[in-house]
Image (cartoon, rainbow, N blue to C red; front, top):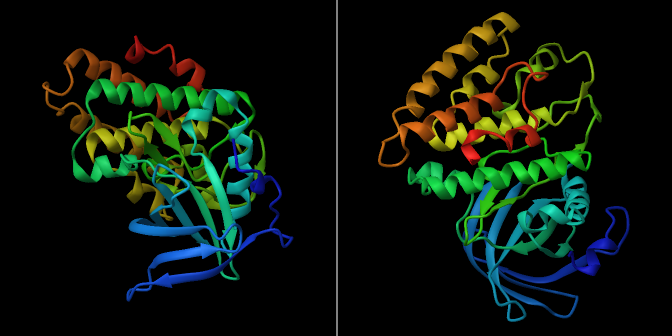
Length: 315
């Protein structure tokens, strides 16, 4: 459950807990600060990540036995309110409470929003991609299935994530996936007049919208399924060749389809070069079927999360 303070927060009122003291090192990174509520003192032990969203730190406090994560974002970041709102919404979905972080505090100062949540020692999925040290295959199948179960619960409750990618998927000490960053989450069938999420994880049905930008895009849960396929294809192959396609604004629908086939063939070849000591040929076929079913270009034929649970990969 969320800290009681969070239910009272609103971007338009003065109920935020204000920072009144903090220390920075020579590089301008936070190192220690305390708050005006209960005089909480936090020691910042390390920098975890930095990105367009802001910075994430690992911190400790005597009140908590485990290490915590501090996410620092500019108050001007438009998705802050949405992220907090969907933290609250998703925490009420019983089936996924073990797959989203526990959120403890939200603080503010004139320029920044500070979100304190659990810290997960195995980091995000992108770390395993960058290190080229794949998680044991049986553990990986468990991670994939847990992701599908989480998406299934979110979708059946009428919501979509809209920004699933390796950086937004953490692993706890038992390698259970933890979904984070709900800044682009929304309701099923919501209308959008802007491109949202990360371009290289966008499905083909967004191509026409991206090229013309002259109509509303209707949010659907099949977007999350496409992103799931890209995510695990990237994890297993160490590459994401979709970036070149999605960043080419001159590409029309026909050329996009041709390039998509070329990318699929290239990544299938990399996938089938995984060593037999890591994955047997039998399970490689199951993995191939799962991933490229997620990457069905026709979203009407693309399986739902519920459909994916019946796939041979999980038998």
